[in-house]
Length: 331
Image (cartoon, rainbow, N blue to C red; front, side, top):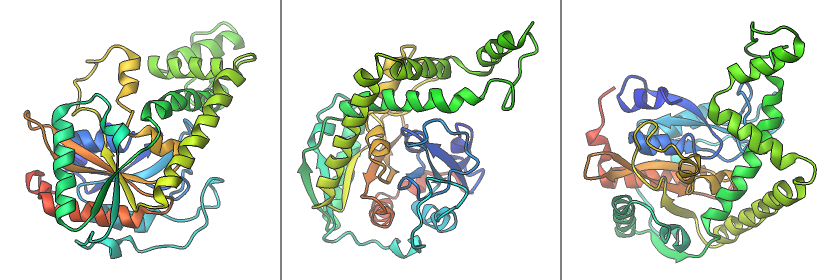
């Protein structure tokens, strides 16, 4: 997906599909100035995906504009009997939401998210976009939600725990790479997993295995699942009164490759996106401006379960108001 996103941004292809476990569609979309949608959990089949965290992974479209995202959702959304997490629901035409009308739409701005420390240019660009939505007739109010850092902590227990289980199958016997440098079967297992996984994947497998181990399951994994329930309830509470929630997509513009050597610093870049995966709700990253170095900035529109239509409607309106597409390469 790291390759696909710049290709969409450069106009080398019309669209791409990605998997989003904690923001892997939305964050790169924000960095590249394109549109990235993580649908409701179970809305799009995961059949064929190499599972990382099965209760969080979701397939979604990456496109140059909101209209293409709506068109692609018409194609990929729907029940698949080959995916046990797939939701059986009524097919919907998402292009009907492509209208420049957010009059009366209620949008919540979580104070706790905007009080976090993040790039001032990102904050200014997102808040300027909020003003545009107000001018278009949206009713924007401040709301109070659980601090996103709790979701981040829960995510980095739950996701590695599920990954340690899902990736256990890649041992060289049936799936994936098999090391040729082994004297016996036990050494083949060890060498295969050492050679086949990168440092970050190994780190997450170790974290997950530790969290699930005897004596630590209750202290870490069970508590993380309880926090997850609270976060889900928090989103449900807000969506009882609001159509959408608006936040930044990422705390900064794109960072240089390997500029953050501390894994904890890298994990913190997920702070605005992981609550969405924890709750299983849909969210879209939409370009909203550029920083002083002409690096793209994205904002995130979050909807209730099956609220992709409202997200597309607000995103399409914003796209027209900001004219971001004028700076994009032609296909």
